[in-house]
Length: 100
Image (tube, rainbow, N blue to C red; front, side, top):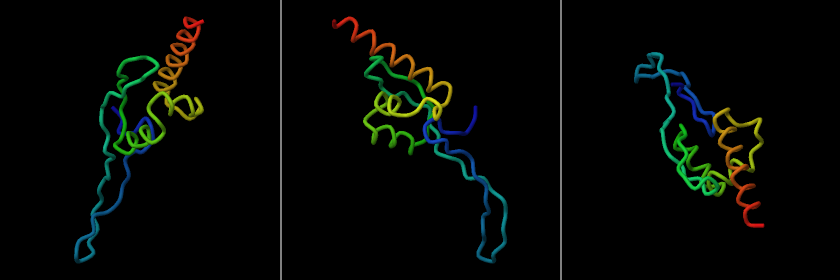
């Protein structure tokens, strides 16, 4: 499992712990990655994604999972998110066709 956010792309960073005496020891800064379910109104179900806390805030800020995915270019999405986006587009098209 990679330590990378599917939404923001945040990953592991490296740096130093610096003591009071300015001794430096290497360390890793890990992103706050969570396996979570986000509701998709188009699919009418929870979608499992692996995202950071900041990624969840981004999704909420953009109006929810569907709105964020549909307004983001597919080339900027991870493969799993592209697949979810395609499922949402197909589900919305099917709902629109059924309404006619």
